Image (cartoon, rainbow, N blue to C red; front, side, top):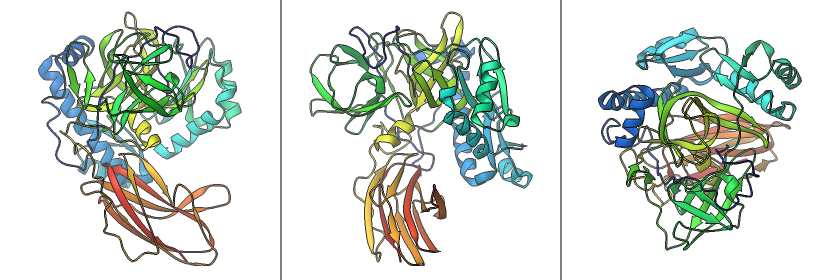
Length: 501
């Protein structure tokens, strides 16, 4: 994750006068949780609807209908991604945005896609395969000159991985060869894009770090998330009113561009995003929008701007270093829009990273998915409801008993934790590994047993039903093991009991 930064100074320094935009938006709605408020109702502010009219040609009624259909498509995609497993190869909305197309590698799975109300198409490479090819490129990122190879991403519509080339293709071809990636699955696309980092100017609710100024991202339990380039762990912040506010608890940049700030008791995280028009936009959840879905962002320089989601998991090769895991859009942005919120209806999507172009001639903008930030720091978005509980349960479930060991933890939707204590245990003899996961009511938590192969962790058993609770039993040989708890959808506190030989 990157950000849009204004100027050419080093991103970490944040000279004074560089502001980011306000983003205080909570989200936590999960597809399997309580029934959400209709996304066509209070999903969009008047400003967002106006932006969708300007940029997408949709009147207010059509925009609300699009929000509702996009929300439904995102939830269908989420369910099919899990249901289809290794046969899943990506999904996107058709050109008319009225149908969701889901790619599968196994023609026998097509009926499942159709039953879910989507349109199947059979392709040769799974999403896992495409991601693995992109990971090969990521591993060789240092060999890709930023000036001539501005980025690469998985393009599920063509079932390939796209490598972008600027000013000729020789450098891009050399990069592909050096990466060792399967060249038959890589497609070269020439582009005029030249991504750069843009320092923020005043936008929304500012906060200050020494001589620099940035903006709040989204409210989370205990504080807020923001861009990593704004400060380092231990840095103190003051709020828009220059009153002592909080301290950076974690920060990651480059490679990522995220951070979280814990606030003091004088500050209360609220479930809002500044609408730059004297009011707030309420966020109800963080369900990921499908490729092709309409999406709008809020920024202090250009206000509300809208476009569509083009691709997930793009690596952007900035001159300061490559950043992976970004979402690609055709919405425009300009210096000062950095850190701004991205919304699809009421669902929070991420924070503005970097981009190419501007809002006069058009451009491409990338954002870092908000769920990744939450997972990295174990935070939960503050939410107003309308798609999930206002706050997740804080009392650990107690449904698991009779095991040798027990641990508890808390996860946000999409996050994972490794037990025991982010480490592993050793079994010196063969025998049965048993575990019971008791997740929060109304969520979908999964459990995986992983074994060390000598070079990597490999899942050897799992419990992946659509329920909150799982049980796993596995007869294994001596070795090193760990449990992975994954919040597939929903947030809250879980309990895990386990026994090993």
